[in-house]
Image 1 (tube, rainbow, N blue to C red):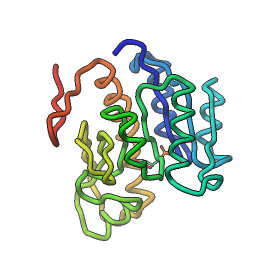
Image 2: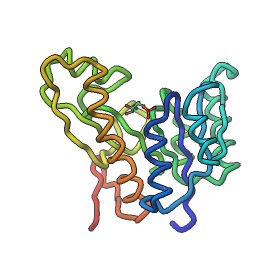
Image 3: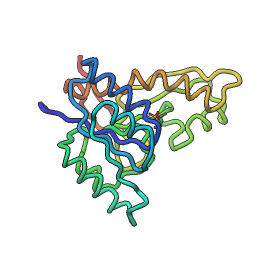
Image 4: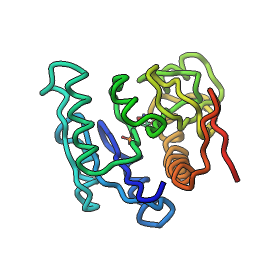
Length: 203
Ligand code: GRF
């Protein structure tokens, strides 16, 4: 689709957002970021967006009584900025079915583990506690079930003796910053086809 516009949703420090900003600047990602939205005020992702002259909007989850109202407000902002592809980058909220329907097949997420292992908000802690020797990161399409959508790309990272959440997280993050821009690049080039549970990647 020509004229794609990215909307990046974050909850915190925004290093994955930064990797997307940098990939737009370098020309790897051939579409602009129309807006960055956070669900909390005062987070670093907002500063990163402002620094890159990208509209930065906080839709504060605390101001909304229900998930439905919050998601409706998110959708209104995305629409306002003409967003066609939603990239969740450390966005710590589950989206409603209504939101997902509005961007069917057009929502990507990054998860810091090799799905379907270690879903949820504590992937590194869980991988270490389980005794996994390999972890990594996954970019996938978003469906209603958490961390369950068709997988686009994965990168494996060793879990080393003595690792804690921070050391493993830092090692995985290096791969995240390469993988997310690559997945967006493939999406924008029209190379991804969802085939049931699988994503076919054409050459
Ligand atoms: C990343 O590890 C991402 O995989 C996970 O949350 C973290 C966000 O980090 N979903 P950042 O805000 O992009 O630095």
